[in-house]
Length: 150
Image 1 (cartoon, rainbow, N blue to C red):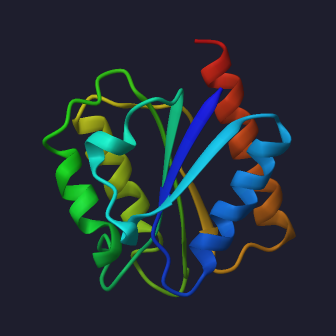
Image 2 (cartoon, helix red, strand yellow; image 1 turned 90 degrees about the horizontal axis):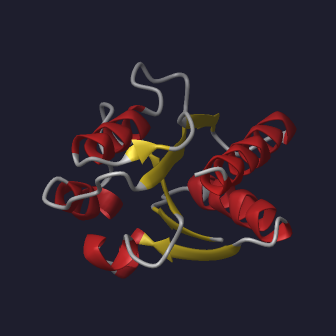
């Protein structure tokens, strides 16, 4: 099984979250390919050659998709993701009214283009603590189980 992950991170929280997920998937003998959205990978190149896809982000400003992944987000609207299994997670700060709203926006954009959410979205408060690490690992295990049964 192969899973591709794309992320954007400003403070390192989302990157750390992706590292926890990647390590957990690798421990399950999953082939994992991770991309920083700042490297400019195109939607049509990302959504190929994998069994599932993970998008990870933080939330910017007033609940917005951050600049680092906004072009990728916009391009999803013009791409057919019919029946492609996608999972979305991200980090945020609960002191903001729009806690992790970019996670919801990414999930909505993917499903509007036909993707199906393989697992419920996951929202992490700031840097992953022990409870968040356990949640990220469970997210990864649910994803691989869901994809394996399809």
